[in-house]
Image 1 (cartoon, helix red, strand yellow):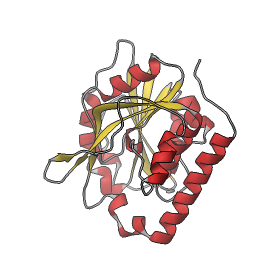
Image 2 (cartoon, helix red, strand yellow; image 1 turned 45 degrees about the vertical axis):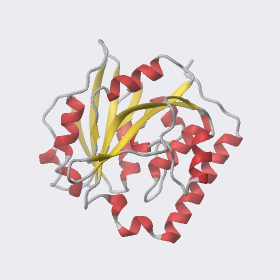
Image 3 (cartoon, rainbow, N blue to C red; image 1 turned 60 degrees about the vertical axis):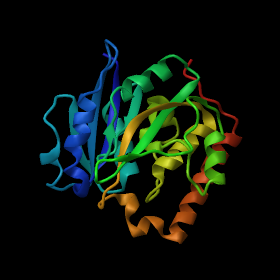
Image 4 (spheres, rainbow, N blue to C red; image 1 turned 45 degrees about the horizontal axis):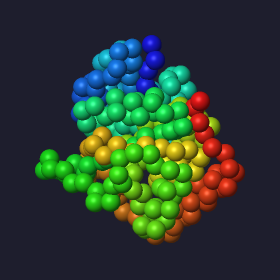
Length: 250
């Protein structure tokens, strides 16, 4: 049966939120003949995460040496040969129909290597806030994400936490970047350097804002580290684009 690998990196502070993520995944409806397989990869080896992992034969829990979320997601790719990979962070929620919309976009067009969708910030009071600069629904041409990101203080107009990608393309690019943060943005820009993508205007993700969020910690905003991360992310994307390689699944 063809299936979609849903990959989640988790560490103890976010483990208690896995139940909500699972509920949002369990509610997804896919076309006949398709199934999802959820790999929950702990970034480390503790006793805190396993009790929070749902008991479902479609869910695999793994542990490994700590190296950050990018390392956890990349090593999880070894445990399935799915055609597609969907990112679901432990503290986020999929909206109804998100997986089916992503799948439909890529199944209908072999020139598309990846898909993203609108993300809404989920605030502690349960309200949601959108992003004013979401693009129009449709293809995302090569280089456009990098150009927008560079011109808007390193903020992409499509959210890397909503990524749905062809597994062979993801592996060809080496998975997520080896960075302490922004590893998902680095992957997104690399993908956009070699492949057309797709953006769905209908919200596909609720991006939880909470006090334990890694991107909300002071270290994430350290100016020197941020500048270094942004520099290597950009250089990688431009280097890939300069090679002239264009991905197509056909």
